[in-house]
Image 1 (tube, rainbow, N blue to C red):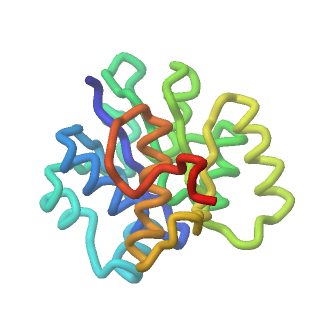
Image 2 (cartoon, rainbow, N blue to C red):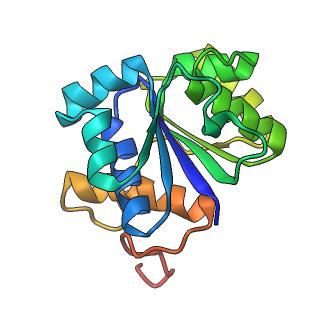
Image 3 (cartoon, rainbow, N blue to C red):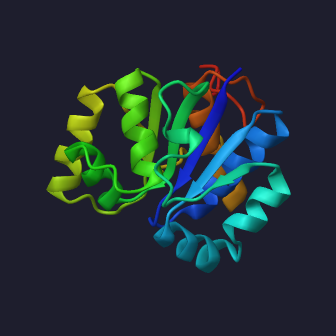
Amino acid sequence: MGEIVVGISGASGAIYGQRLTEVLSQMGRQVRLIVTDSGRLTLKHECDNTPEALAEATGAILEDARNVGAKSASGSAKIDAVVICPCSGTTIGKLAAGISDNLVTRSAIVAMKERRKLIIVPREAPYATVHLENMAKLSAWDTIIVPASPGFYNHPRSIDDLIDFIVARVLDLIGIEHELGRRWTGDEI
């Protein structure tokens, strides 16, 4: 099993990246955590957490977002997937333009060139036309786009249930078995 790269960019919704890191670590998966400068601010404001504390609590390997030579950016490293969660509109734009100016964008572009699984979780509302165009471009290049839009058919009772819905979808797309939430069976109606 290869490692999973979790990037947290500056979009609102840092809790999604934090929870994904926690769940992957609880499942015994090695996480390489990258938090952009804007992601650091959002993680502190929304979760009252720091990248260092999150890495320590989960056993994740924290990589410096300015170090584009880190393992996460290597095409020869054993990386199973790169997930940017949440993914800001700025990061989406950089990826669509092929700009790798930090370790999050560099890791994602390496994932594209190596045909690794790349999942982005945009958390914008509403989307500007430029965001939609850039997401369409990324989707055409096999990037999986999972908007942070939780479902309600499972009758969520808490914010944690809503967060876990998105984290469960990401785990499904990576191909990791889990027991977060209930799956739709078709018998609910």
